[in-house]
Amino acid sequence: MNAKPWKVESMRNHFGQALVDLGRNRDDIVVLGADTTESLKTSLFGEAFPDRLFNVGIAEQNMVAIAAGLAMSGKVAFACTYSVFGTSQVYNIIRQSVAYPDLPVKIFCSHAGLTVGPDGATHQMNEDVGLLRSLPNMKVLVPCDGLEVGKAVHLAAEVSGPLYCRFSRAKFPVLTAPEDPFALGKATVMRDGDDVALVATGIMVSRALEAAEELATQGVDARVVNNSSVKPLDRETLLRAARDTGAVVTAEEHTVLGGMGSAVSELLAQEYPVPMQIIGVPDIFGESGDGFAVLDKYGLTAESMIKAAMHVLSTKEAVA
Amino acid sequence: MGLDQALIDELDERARVLRVHVVKMTHAARSGHPGGSLSAADVIAALYFHILRLDPKDPSWVDRDRFVLSKGHGCPVLYAALAERGFFPVDDLVTLRKLGSHLQGHPEYGTTPGIEAPAGAEGQGLSISIGMALAGRMDGRDYRVYAMLGDGENDVGQTWEAAMAGANFKLDNLTAILDRNQLQQERRTEDIMSLEPLTDKWRAFGWNVLEIDGHDMESILEALYEARTTQGRPTMIVAQTVKGKGVSFMENVLRFHGTAPNDEELEQALSELGEPS
Ligand SMILES: Cc1ncc(C[n+]2csc(CCOP(=O)(O)OP(=O)(O)O)c2C)c(N)n1
Ligand SMILES: [Mg+2]
Picture (spheres, rainbow over the protein chains, first blue to last red):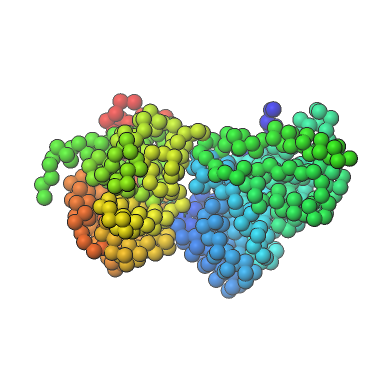
């Protein structure tokens, strides 16, 4: 299948620039990094506001708890590093010192998922969404492109309490426009269709759009939903998609256990059960290789989504 | 002490060959961490070609010495040493970081022959080494455990938990080597989270601390010998090194922490290392 000719962009450039824009209007914003400020472009914030950026070195536990202390003292603290180090490395610090006291600590992490590529399994964080979404008070965002990452920064500063946002090292296709809305608890319908719903996050949104195009040539009208607000979920949009189509496929660059697909299945199983397939990283660790080649090897492809769509469609028909 | 000059020459040559592999491997992978591999090359050569008791044909021999690379991103130089020592074919080296290769971007335990521990997230290796040293003592085995840390790993709290544990358990079968190359990922260590006075800190934590020029083979060997005979506490060898050592344009250059040489840079690096490209 031909990949669409989308423009690709660094998500981290948008991230760094959005923090600078935010910092200009809000002097309660502080940013922390862990020997990763150049990499995440939080160094831009440091150049603009040298006394509001704290690089604590390779000390993520310290970073998150310092962020908690800053948040207890009137600051809105952005703790930023690679997703494996900003989540699993510091899980109980987040749990006890951030989520439990419901503090405005915003954990923004790049380098999520398999597209980290050659660094291999130790750095390919495929469990973060599941870990973070199970914490009370925590909100979880998974933007699909750089523009959404920028909007997530501003959104995070507006909403109360803790929030986790995961994005990627790889350049991602630009799928949204600057004027498109981006809100907590809101999913976006990227393409209309009533036969099957493809609900995706991150890189898989572009692959869902490719899958939908191919499905259209086979007479299947797929709705594509960008489910960037994993917690809280957009119940209305998701339930409507389930009702209108009666068949749902989710896709995410994350383990199939506990991530966005799990969140959607928890909702649908309890409120409107329909045939459903979850596409994601199987229950195994990743491996080194070109990031997009690893995605393909693990079945995070438009082809897998088409196959899954056909499967849920036939189940729907069998039931009906 | 006056060590055998022939041995020193041989180990220096081994280190040169390891450096050649490092630049070739990271170039072929178009990614990876040459800087911290090159700074560690001399110590790794001393360990793998003289100090460690190993059997490449039996990588899980119970009485082998263990080497744990805590700074896992420096694995290219370790893979090169393992290959040159016969654990797997030298030809495998250029598959580093490629899909399907057993040479992962960061060490994978149980896959690559000779790799003793997983690493990637900084700061876990010294604790693992303590577990191995405790087990060796429990079982009455005389193997020794070696761990190599990056100086950036002194930022990590767990490193100091391990420092306390090593001294508390009086692990004289444990030797750590700190690759004190002054740089971490994006700055000098002293410009991010000041570490100094670093040898005093390790001494205060109860370790036998030796400070050496980590590119001087004679000093490396003398320190490793002394560690072997030290009783009642673990030894920390602070090896003063240069990140990127051996390739002029990589020396002390932050970019080569995590960037591979391009075609031109490879050629220049090989010529500086006295290797036809
Ligand atoms: C816990 C953790 N946080 C962040 C990183 C990302 N990272 C990889 S290497 C590195 C710097 C390492 O510096 P150092 O230990 O001095 O290694 P060397 O200079 O020998 O390459 C960082 C921050 C990591 N690997 N682990
Ligand atoms: Mg260093």
